[in-house]
Image 1 (tube, rainbow, N blue to C red):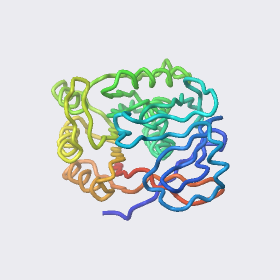
Image 2 (cartoon, rainbow, N blue to C red; image 1 turned 90 degrees about the vertical axis):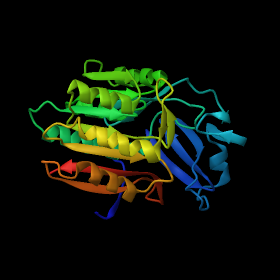
Image 3 (cartoon, rainbow, N blue to C red; image 1 turned 135 degrees about the horizontal axis):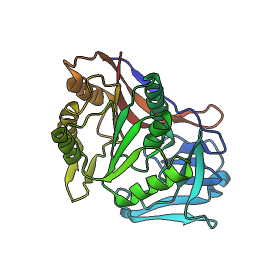
Length: 303
């Protein structure tokens, strides 16, 4: 197994995204023209910026005693000025719409840009070959947009109709309405099994499975038992010459080694040789400050 790599995102301007500070269980970020303070359990160190800067945040996410960020129950935003329902944030030439949600998220995970670039490089290197990509648990679609812009045909699957509509808004805002992206509300495991029966195949598969979730029809997803089953099914829908696989996770009970071992098992004996890279996605505080780990990943790339 390779060494663990820390991957930092590129392509953000300080005006569109910046991690301004972190510490004491929170991170202070700029999304476009809006400054937000959001919880982050990994940021247990002291803050660097004065309290007055934190107090000036446009909105701060709070959780009441017994509140649950996963469901949005008992949570709220303390908003200091009137904010639009949605506002644009730009990454390279994509336009992504940010919103305040009851789950502390904004619909944009800036650290994921490290994966977006990785996917685009592999799609563009395929030359005239028509690349097909499957994005499971795709959320608001930034990875799908980056892949489509690079030339891939994309199938985007998420259980939430609301976030699928959000993804379509991002597609239109980015000027990519004519790009081939299928937006599907479905359970990831059931969808992959149906694709195998239909004989559908993909060159790239990307997934960001939750620790726990429910499918479009109430199907239960549990990371520890459902992910190995999903990867076994995904093996059957790979093309004869697959380009890559990305598994990303925000589950704090998992590790990059765990994801790497699962990916190694999935691709064992495949006729196409490849390499596995594992690591953490991280954000760096403005001015070259501390690194804040945000997610773990494993990636397989054909060689």
